[in-house]
Figure 1 (cartoon, helix red, strand yellow):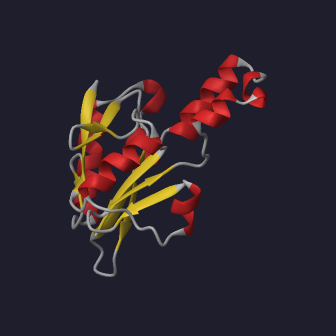
Figure 2 (cartoon, rainbow, N blue to C red):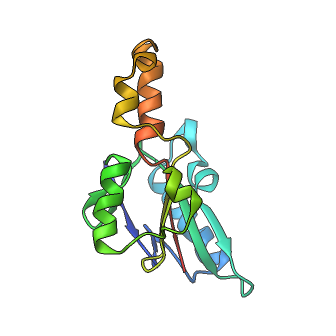
Length: 160
């Protein structure tokens, strides 16, 4: 599996902050040519979220977990296959996250403003939740999805 380098404050893979729409379209074409398949021929157009500032240059890039295509890596850390609680502690040692954010307190969104990096998950699940009686009663395949969605981050973004 190829690595997709997450470079906070700079970009994700070949997509860089500061690019214009033509540059982004060129990157999309390159990725789609290299990773084309019938069932996901527009994968990158569908999953890369890019926002532009008033000068029409990229100031925000977000990707979801593309585990079937890429390993999202920052500083030799796999951002999508490292448990969220562990990942936050690791990156917090590099640069502190914004602790004045209600979403961080609840465990959904962590923003690292000095890096220009955000991590998000739609559900929060702890080890205690996995050991709870209610969790053990859930079907294994559903429990696997719960773990993936609740114990790991679902998307990463870089911004300036």
